[in-house]
Length: 144
Image (cartoon, rainbow, N blue to C red; front, top):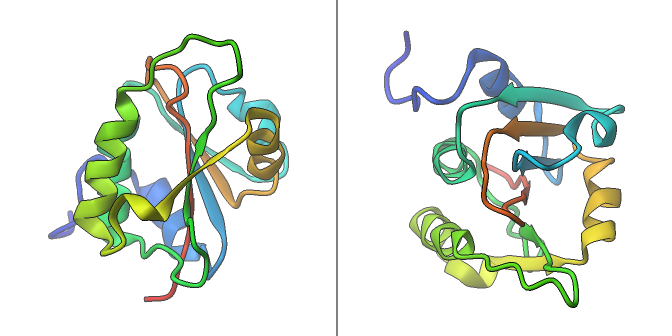
């Protein structure tokens, strides 16, 4: 056991967060995200039974966001014509604001298929059991 480490962060996830360097990206994926196929060339960590907001908050407790890019947090943009609602994004804004002085201005949106392409180059993908749609979030690591 370690002190001050959020219990939701598994040893495997802690190791990955530690290994990541400046500008490396990690995807926290919802339950519908094709984590295994997108993650063929990166590390895929299973976090079934956990939601994205809880993991996002725990990760940002330890993980600095990149100050050298305008939007180090990226969300998957809702497809045109899709009537999906994204109330979970408000939770993300609050969580990011609790951990980064830029608040919600650090969050951007990426078109769905571009998000997939960028996810293929991520250092790791965390596959969660999150049921909300468009709940995927990509973080770019900064410097401690």
